[in-house]
Image 1 (tube, rainbow, N blue to C red):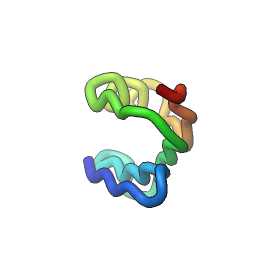
Image 2: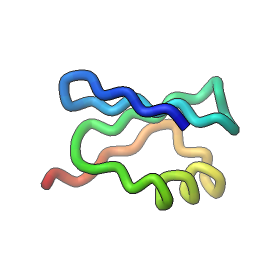
Image 3: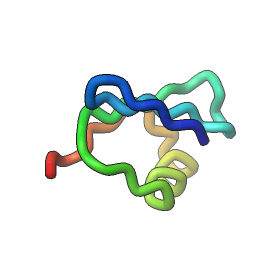
Image 4: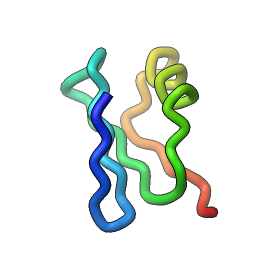
Length: 51
């Protein structure tokens, strides 16, 4: 899993789904939860709650 942060936007490329990019507009990324959600739901994008 690759994470790149650009201006409070996290761009996540998931190894199992290389063609899908998940955008997190703000907040922290819980990698364990993210990995589980991606595998179960193949989320295209998600918004993370602000701190």
